[in-house]
Amino acid sequence: MFILGIETSCDETAASVLSDRTVLSSIVSSQVALHERYGGVVPELASREHLRNIIPVVREALDAAKVRQQDLGLIAVTHAPGLIGALLVGVSTAKAMAYALHIPFIGVHHGEGHIVAAHLEYPKLEYPYVALLVSGGHTALYHIRNFGSYELIGQTRDDAAGEAFDKVAKLLDLPYPGGPVIDRLSREGDPKAIPFPRGVREGSDFSFSGLKTAVRNHVALFRSKDRGLDPGLKVADVAASFQQAVVDTLVEKTVQAAASRGLRSVVMAGGVAANSGLRSSMEKGCQSAGIRLFIPGMGLCVDNAAMIALAGYLRFSRGERSALDLNPRASMGL
Ligand code: KG4
Ligand code: ZN
Image (cartoon, rainbow, N blue to C red; front, side, top):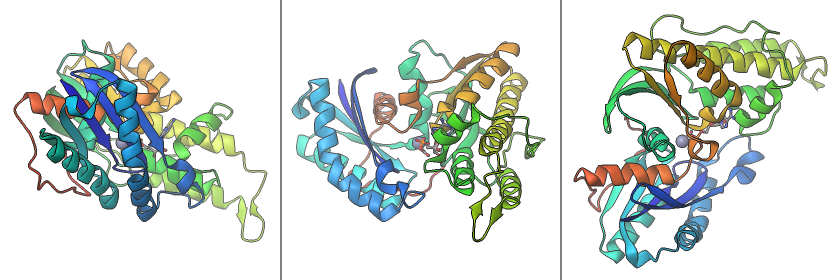
C-alpha cells in the first residue's frame, strides 16, 4: 500500500511516500531562514509559509516516489501537538485529499512519529524498549511494550531540552535554531570549564530551567548594556559546558530507566537526538550497561513526514482511521 505522510506541526513543511514500511521519498522544506531574524518561530508566519509550500511539497514527494495520487491508499497527518495554525494546514490538506481520492486518512501524534522513526531505520528493532524523546517540544522517557503502548516514566518539569538549547543560544547571541549551533561550537570548547548544575538528581523527571538560569547568570557577568557581550566570554566553553550538563542528565536517566526495568534496548528520538555529543555519550552509557541503542539517522531525527506516514500505517493496520471532522490540537499527551 502507498501511504502519503504530511507534517506541518512547527516550522518544516514535510511530505513523504511510503510503500508499506519502505520510504520511497521524504521531502522537507525548512522555514528556518524565514524565522531566523526573529530568533524563534513566529506562528502566523509559519502557517502562511506552510500554506504556500504544502501543495508543491506533496507534489514533489509523489513525483520523487514515482507514485500517482490516485494510487495512494492512505493519508497520514500530524494532528497534534504543535502550533495550531500550522497543524491546521496539514490536517486540512490531508482531509481534502482523502475526501477527493475516496481513501482513508488518519491523524498521528507527532511524538509517536518521532519514536517509530527508529523502526524505519532498524526494521528488526523489537519491543519492549525505553524511548527517550528529546525535541524542541518534548523531553520524556517512555516504557514501550508494543506499538501504541506508551507508559510515561518521566518527563521535563519545565523546558524541553531543545527549548533549553534554543534559549541558551539566544543568551549567547547565537542564531536560531540554537541546537545545531551549540553542537558545533561545543566541539571547540571545554565541557568542564564551567560546572553548570545537573537539575533534578532523583527520579526520572528532568528539569532544565535551573541550568538555563545558571547560564544566564554566568553570561550576565560578561554583558554590559551599551557594549553587549564582552569578548572575554569564552562562548565555546559555555556552549560545551551547557551541552555536557544536558547530555549527562539525559544519559544517566535513560540508562537508569532501562536498567531498573530490565529492558535491554533504548531508542532515542527527536531533534535533539541529532546532537553529536548526546549520540556519542548515550552510545557509551548504554554500552557499559549492556544496553543496545537505536538512534535514527539525522534526517529521521528532525521533523519529517516519513515517520508520520509509518505511524499512520501502523495504526491503520490495527483497524484505526480518523473521521473527517478530526480537529488539530495544540497540546496532547502520547
Ligand atoms: O524534533 P524537532 O525537529 O521539532 C520538534 O518537534 O520540536 O526538534 C527541534 C529541536 C530544536 O530545539 C533544535 O534546536 C533541536 O531540536 N536540535 C538540536 C540539534 N539539532 C536540532 N539540539 C541539539 N543538537 C543538535 N544537533
Ligand atoms: Zn518534532
